[in-house]
Image (cartoon, rainbow, N blue to C red; front, side, top):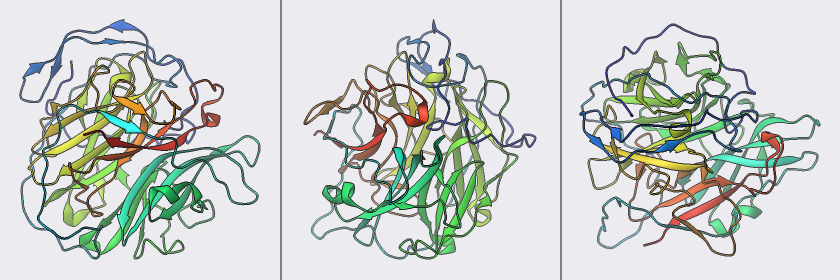
Length: 411
């Protein structure tokens, strides 16, 4: 059962995880051990919903975690108001404002991949994955992970590209970031932090960040700085922290992350002390490592007091996304579309136009309505840039041919 309860924030500092043990970027493994778990899901208020689920090994899904986890999570409180005005805008239009409710069930359509590996001269990429996307000044800006095989053995690196329309995305120049001040920015997240009037790029390993005054200035990113003091390192089959995600309310900033151990973690700091995160707690725990895997996303839903939480999962299956909602970033989190049969997005509710090209609906990001730290989302315009791959191609995880596709909600 998923549990939510109080834990202290501060834990002892542990060593950071090595760069060959994370998702999106972990080596191939055996997945979690099999078994049938108990009934339902428990939210923070103690309400149990849903029927039992069967969990098990990840099949061909790479994972180094074992099946079960029993940790519990905690609630913290945060209220407030304020925030500085943002510079620029993420697009918009005239006419009356149209609002939509966040759906409770989802059906998506996807075309062929919109972005494939496109290395610059002298480099070779086996994949492109883990995208973060923001719309600013009439352009989509995308940062993504690539597996660079130029040296033969291969290693995780990153690229930046921009385009004005998704029809142009695959032709956009993929700017190699290995020689930038940031170095490799694996599993990135990008947003504009209004109180500092700066762009932030959050990435691993370990949790790090860089800043820039102008997202269009590729040479303007600062050198990496530590994101989370006391970050948990690898402990046996449990990985160190990975797939960091920042979202702020009026008073506090929240840092969500995973460890491939069936738990979702969070750190929290007042907005005036961002980005100096220190310590962490467990938000929720699943009965198997695959049911709370990686790639958490959290958004503020426009026109409502709701937050939407997504976490990538697998359950003897290809990857899919589960979802929850809450009226506070402190929780409790209530299940929304959180099963393999009725997911937020997965093989059960995605239809492909032009032929199926992936079984996985994996690490990605919804296209936001804004570009700042509030991570706002327009439920009238739900699009999800995700990673997928040809399931017939196996081998070393890094060399699996991941590409980026775009889901559009089928209304």
